[in-house]
Amino acid sequence: MNNMNLLNDEIMHKDSINENNDSNVFQTNIENNDGNINQYKSQEKIIHFEKGSKVCLKRCSILGISMVITLVSLLVGLLRYNSLWCFIIAGPSSLVFLYEACFFIFCCCGFHVVQPNNALVFEFFGRYIGTLKDNGFWYGYPYSTARTVSLRSIQYNGNRVKVNERDGNPVELGIIVIWKIGDTAKAIFDVVDYNQFVETQSEAAIRYIGCKYPYDPVKPGEMSLRGGHEVINHELKEELEKRVKPAGIIIEDARVTEISYGAEVAQMMLQKQASTAAATAKETIVKSATNSIIQSLNEFEKYGCRLKEEDKAKFVISMMNTLCMSSEISKIMSNNQ
Image (cartoon, rainbow, N blue to C red; front, side, top):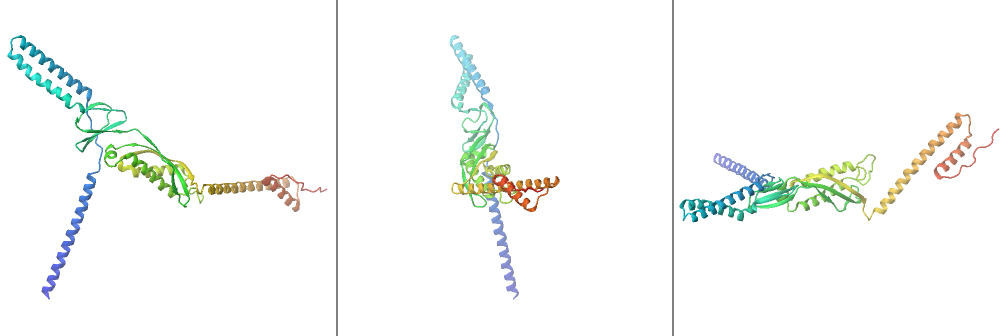
């Protein structure tokens, strides 16, 4: 029995060790995967080059001086009957001349021009080097690949998007987004096409906001698409910023420009709005007419003109017809001595 107990203890101990090892391996794999994922996330690195005019002037000066020294040395050596010192001087100067000539032939592709509000993203044999944002004429990395990226603000006028609002009614929403590139490395290397990415995410954001609120408020003070413009625009901008952040895009402004019912329910909803407005207007008219009649009766009593109950009833009916139905006032008071 003791041997069996010892054997069971050893088996349980081995199982616990294997479980611990498996969990450690699993955690290590997760960490490695996270590390690999983070490894491919790009981050902008600003670089600065030497001025192209300065490099060009320096190289041209060296090229011209070396060419002049070479020619002068050769001419003097030939005129003085093959002078050895002149040929010795002409040798290094000719090498310098050849070096500078080769520089202009093979390295002239290193000159770059950066326009205002533009940037150059440099790759060297498939590896990201950095981004040049300084405007002007520069020299650096002659055999690298340079991509031009615009840093200007771009306006995107989205097409009308049909969504079902919170209550299920189809509505059409229009959107306008003003954006620009904030991180050139993310915009170039982390998404395939940042323009298409912004357009797709803008449509997704407006669909999310459109499904979240009703077209018109159901309860008094309730947020709606038609009534809460500033709140809707602010929430739309925040939602869009979250969605385009992986691409290094900065959202300067995002607004809903058009809100309307879908074509299939537009006529019915317009009739509903018209009937609601008419009912509200009539309710206001009735309240105003009632207040006017009460004030008139009070004025009559104030100046000692007392009416019978029948006359009051006729007066009220006539005044209500006049104020609410635009009918003429009829004679309602009898001649009392």
